[in-house]
Image 1: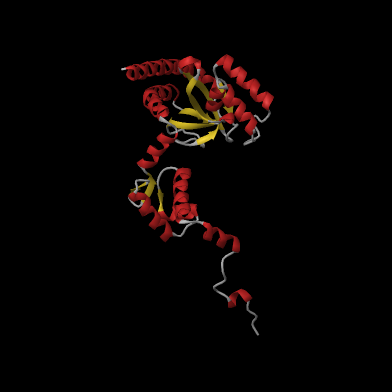
Image 2: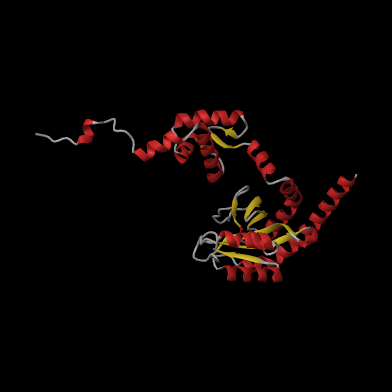
Length: 278
């Protein structure tokens, strides 16, 4: 006599309760947002099958929602794949205000100069509350694996660009300390006194470092771009793989490019003030 598993008698066994609850609780809006988040997290272009897997949706639901998002310019179709649409960029610009957009346009040539001088991954970032937002990035064939991408936010306290900006913004620095300094890697500075001392050193030298503090294997060096009243409006950084990258070697190039960028910001500010008065 052959014994059969009880499960064999019930081929239509319902899904695990936790999975069913998650499915029941997700509205169409939740699922559409999950698709946008998956596109943002993965970067680049993704097909329907991969998007369905990343978002925890069926392929049919994924395809249907992508059609809705495409009609509203939230995603764009590229062959059989999809990427974030132009409307997402417009919304991002409105969220972070017009200043990053003007800065991105004015400072792009200087970011390009920095890439030419270093041949490494270079970033332009701004401070938003206690996070930094990457508003531009240029990389070549030797790009190190990094959590940075245009539009991404990272905690300021553990990034070189963030520390370069926090060093000259006392209120934001203290807000970051009060919010806590979670350890992302074994190299992350989590002690408030040590963190404040490092910010003081950055104010004196004008150079900030991230030695595998935000992600293992990634090292960065950054400088602030100063605006009116001696306050930074953005920061440049150079990043590379820790095993081959000596960040201090790029400090002179960063200082030179940041000096020219600061002059460009001053010109931009004067032009906007003159336009307002007119």
